[in-house]
Amino acid sequence: MELTKEQQQILDGAKGETMAKIMQTLVMYGETFGATKMVPVTGEMGHLVTSFGLGVMKPVYELMDKLIADGAVSGQKFTVDPKPLDKNVPSDFLKNLVFRKFMYSAQDSYDAQLEQLGLADKDGYTCACYFDQVGNKPKKGDVLSWAESSAVVYANSVLGARCNRNSGIIELFGSIVGYVPYFGLLTDEGRKAAWVVEVKTSAVPEAQILGSAIGMKVMEDVPYIKGLSEFLGRELDEKTCAYLKDFGAATASNGAVGLYHVEGLTPEAREQGEDLIAPNARTYVIDDAELARVKASYPVMWKNPEASPKLCFVGCPHLSLEQLKDWTEQVSRGLKDRGLSKVAVPTVFTTAPAVMKEFQKLPQAKTLEETGVVLSYICPLMYMNNPLAGKMPVITNSNKLRTYTTARYYTSAEILDIITGGGRK
Ligand code: F3S
Image 1: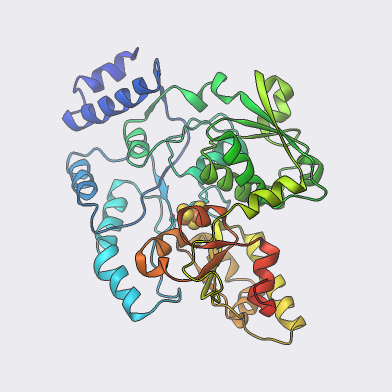
Image 2 (image 1 turned 90 degrees about the horizontal axis):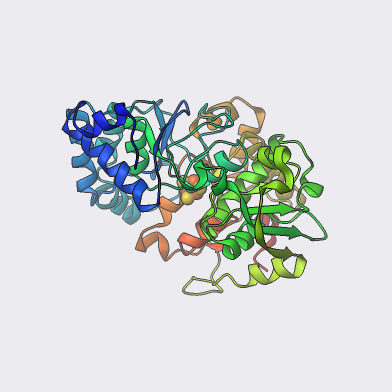
């Protein structure tokens, strides 16, 4: 790899041994992927994926201590993925004991380390850091050092920033040293589409199933999606961005997509059109039957598939303010229509702490409280990823949560029906 004079000096120890090791790690990481140079991180803020203080992650805490002691803190402020714990989320004595005493026993000390390393704000814990209320919204062309897959795919696709699907810690190293290796989605070539996806459905496709179908088909390749803007329009307004957020998270978790282009809608597709399609790109046609086939292929991981759901999560990735308002109105109306006052299944809506604060100023906050739905800032995946919660029959409209846990997937309309007393079909 060819380094600039300054990069070489850092590698040679001009900024200390720890910085040299960080640079060396990034150079080795880049060389593995054929990078020929390091480029500056130009995005204003970083974002870290590791938000949870799992007791067993001792080497991570030792590493953080070393970075802090040696002054190798992040050159840029950063936000972090959502926290794993919230006392408002329905739990029981045993789970609380396991969460606090065994699993996330290092949460408080880890939070303190994050603050010392450069956490932007105590409320900066969300995977949707690009929401206006949170303020970590990269500009088009910004080079980022992030790892959270749902945020990376959103930043690349909807905002036109440039970021690889890095791993945890590597993304922190990029923020500390201020450089990332130049390969993959940072390059023009790496942003070309190897797939053309033709959406030929009879109605707007469910974002999380469409994303899942595309993710499972193209895996880590870039898809160029035709036919979707006929349903979504050609403006990146709040509603469309929320759709693309949920769609993208599904492509990134059901496959490994880091960037997609939507014809006539996403920034690079608007500018370059079909020039973004690589020669010999393959074609994938998605119609109603294909979406139904994909949905039917999801395995049911519950011990008893006939069990009644004990918990429902909506908001993975975190809900936008508009989505939160919309869900509140729909749940409230659905309950009224059935003559009910409270949701039939304990339900948690998850969103960013900063969005929560805005929502709580609105009349809908009281309406939501009256329905019995709990509003939280946690990551449902962190809540579910243990044997106790894993045994619970949990339902969700998140394809990411379905993929990584035993939660069972339903469309948003089905979830609404179930939690407002319509039962499970
Ligand atoms: Fe966000 Fe956690 Fe889902 S990080 S995308 S809420 S798995």
